[in-house]
Image (cartoon, rainbow, N blue to C red; front, side, top):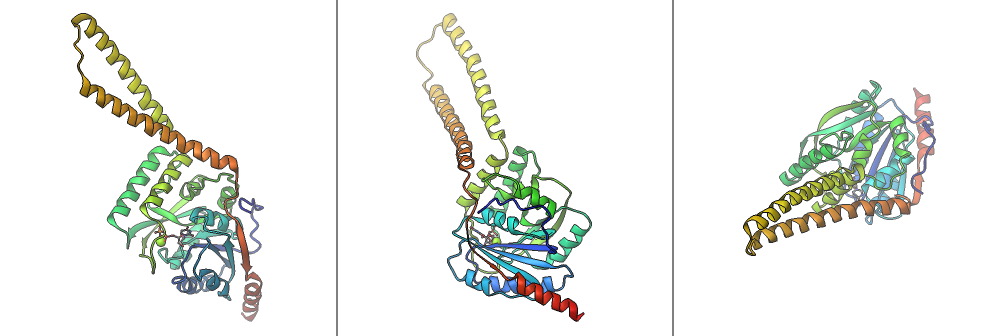
Length: 335
Ligand code: UDP
Ligand code: MG
């Protein structure tokens, strides 16, 4: 499984797909489902909800498979273990059929009530609707500042513009989803991948709520890993920077070397300069180790790409589309 390239425009009558990746969210899923269904009920479009269970170890999976709806078809795709949110989102995109696809977090930090606004923008002809966090409730000062710094660094290093303060909550048109599904890479930094195809973008600001309950699955170590993933899978500029730093240090060293030789020949030199020797040695050692580490990051990524393992494995797919479609048809007949 994984990286199944679906046929383009296989919408089969579904206009909107909502993808919900989740990992151990049993406390919030019933509330999310309720709020999502209230929104989908108010829409005239036919819709499907794809829950991606990213290897939950609590009761989330049983909960989701028991969900019913008269307004949308519901699918629960249970991955065989925890593959991470990026892989779970990829699974959702590959299984989506809608002409517009929305990705939303399960913890209700992204309000489902904004879906109609996103759809309205999509109907105006935009392919990507980015939901920009104008306020981030329930997040520490350190997280907000480090996120802002990361976006700045990322956009300096990467050519394709990754919008600041836009998470994974966004709408993508079928065309963009089909292009993303065709990308063969295993290093899936989704915020970069969403921005990569281009097409017409629109941004809607929104207030990001605090988590409904529970705790974020990301700690700082994981976030640093994600940031390194983001930079190294989208740009080779750090390597170029290492080359440039190396070249300038080498040039400086040649000039300084010439100066020392000249000084020794002309004036003679008693052995001295231990402090300057140590400083240069340590600085150069540090830069060299950093550059080797950087090189290692890229080699590691080549290793992962070459192995070409699937992004995720599916254990079960529960499809409630049949009952929903029948109920939808009955509802339409009643009107
Ligand atoms: N999530 C997931 N797999 C993981 C970690 C998280 O599918 O390995 C889901 C999680 O259940 C939630 C969404 O990704 O629906 C965002 O996660 P979280 O709220 O922990 O991240 P934050 O909002 O703090 O960035
Ligand atoms: Mg969250």
